Amino acid sequence: MMMNMDKPKLQGFNIRVYGIYMQANSVLVTDEFRLGLRMTKFPGGGLELGEGVIDCLRREIKEELHQEPVILQHFYTTDFFQRALLVEPPSQLISIYYFMDLPFPNLIPLSIKPFDFPHVEEGAQSFRLLKLDESFEAMTFPIDRHVWKLLQKTFLKGKN
Image 1 (tube, one colour):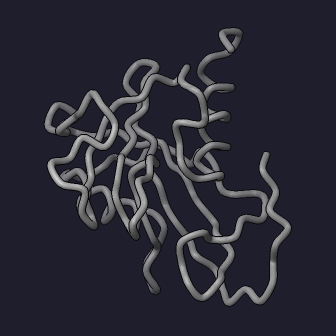
Image 2: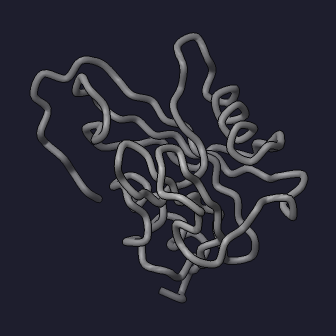
């Protein structure tokens, strides 16, 4: 588990909600270009003020995948300090992960290669299935890497 003890002058919380969609031993990830950075992460995003976490996940998945997810169960909520990396003012990041199902998985435009978008521009996004036996280093952010390892521990018992 990665611990980040750098806590100076934090000004609140940044709460993110993500969906974990699995097909066999593969997991849906999104490759994105935001804030000048390439990132690989789970689908989902930021909780808005006055919004519940399930409503947030539904909204984010509808925005990204254009379908209503079926929320199956909570998997993980951040249990260590992590400073939000890409936002100002400095804040503490809390990420919440749910297993989800999708009614029309065949409608997800899947790519085979990472960052498979026509132009590298703000907001560019593509999706792919990443095999669970891939290294946690395929994920960009510390909490996602931790969750990837938890998924491996849960679903690849005796194989890693």
